[in-house]
Amino acid sequence: MGSVLIIKNNYEIEQALQDKLKEKYQLHIVEDAWSGLDTLDEHHIDVFIMMSAEETSDEILNFLRQAREDHSEWTPTIFISTERTEKLQLERDKSVASFFIPYPIIDNELLERLETCVRVAVLFDDQTIIIEKNGDDYKYKVKHVSRIERIKGRRIKVYYHNPVTQMEETEDFYYDHPLEDFITFHRVENRIRQAHQSWLVNTSHVKSVSSADYELILYDGKAVPTSRKFIGNFKRKRINKAKGGNKQ
Image 1 (cartoon, rainbow, N blue to C red):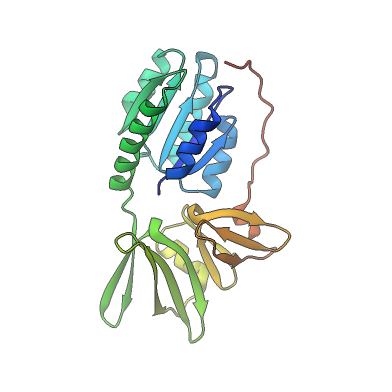
Image 2: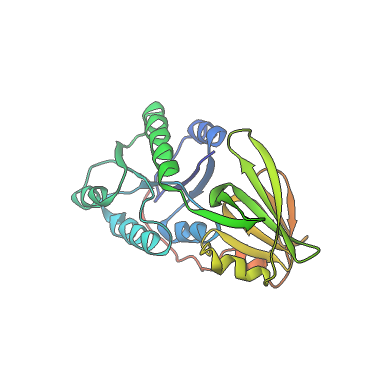
C-alpha cells in the first residue's frame, strides 16, 4: 500500500473518489502546502497530488522545493488544475515522474495515473538498512520496517513486513549502543524516530497519535508506547498560517 498526499488548495474532491483512494492507499488530504509540510514531518509520502490554480502555484512550488531538499527529490507528482500554467509545466519538467490532470477530475484517469506513480515510487524508494548477525548481513528496506524494540541482553528486535508473504516477521540482533544511535548510523532520521526509551517507530506506519494514552497506533492495528519526551517526534511542529482564496 502506497502513501499519497493531496494538497487541495481550495479545490474539492468528491467523497466517492476519496473512498476509492482510501481502499488502495494511505491517504492524507490537507488544505494547503503549509499543512503539507506538516504531514511530511510525520509521514513518508510516495506520491504528491498538487491541486493548484495560477494564484496558488508559487506556494505549491515552494512546497516542492522544500520537500525535495528535506526529504526526497524523486517523489512522483500529479498536478491537477483548471488550466496548465507555465509555472506548473516548468515544475513538471523537473520531476522524475509527473502528470497533469485537468479539473474537474475524471476518477479513472486519476486512479490510473496514481497507480503508475506508486510503481515508480517503489522503484526509487530503495533505502535499505543492513544489520550484521553471526557473520551474515540482514537487509531490510526501510519502508517495510514498522518498528524496532530494545529488548533484554543488549539486543534489539526488528519488526518487518515481508512484501512477498504479506506477513510480519521479526529478527533480533545484538546492539551494544544507545537506541538513538541506530537512527543516525543508518541515516534514517526522516523515516524512523524514537517513540520511547525502548522503541523506534517508522513514521509512515503511524495511523494516529494518542496524547491521552501516550500511544502510537499503527496501520496494522498494533499499539506502541510513547512518552512525554518523545511524543513530539510524531506530532505537528509547525503553526499553520491563515490562507485566503475562493473555492474553485
